[in-house]
Length: 219
Image (cartoon, rainbow, N blue to C red; front, side):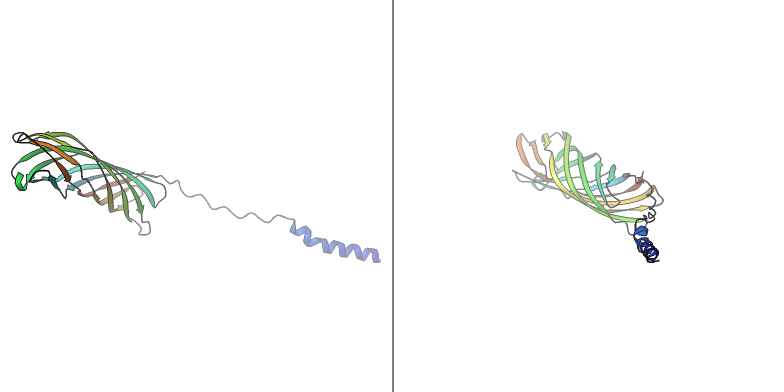
């Protein structure tokens, strides 16, 4: 009788331990989000508004003209908030004399303002997605064309400078949106020319504001 009672107690005592050995139900795994495509393409019309002047080793200064041109940029999003943007455009500008050089046509120059921006995009405003960015510009000046007459030679040296931007995309649907963008790019190239048979050198302060608007496509 005693042996039977002990057997029952042992079985009852062992039951919680055995139950603890039974694996619990595995929690359900959340469904993976839709694939995130990191690429965005924008096409804009931009106004390049140089805040320009140039100081030379002789009296006088120079001015660089405004210009409206098309621009293409490609952005790569590492996350929905963090992106890097590369910008491609060409523009041609007229350089004219000021001060003691007033009325003197200096010449024309083409500029490729190669710029890379690191951006932060705000994603908590629905379809309205503002962003801000900072980056580095390397401006390439080419096809300098002296105006002739008093100026027989014109040369600008490629320049580095910081850049900053603010803007927004307003997404009309999953892929298409409109874009407005404002940049400031510091450009201070060295400039050399021959005017009236004399060598003239200095530094041009171009440093344009760049205002743009266009369309965006998110792949």
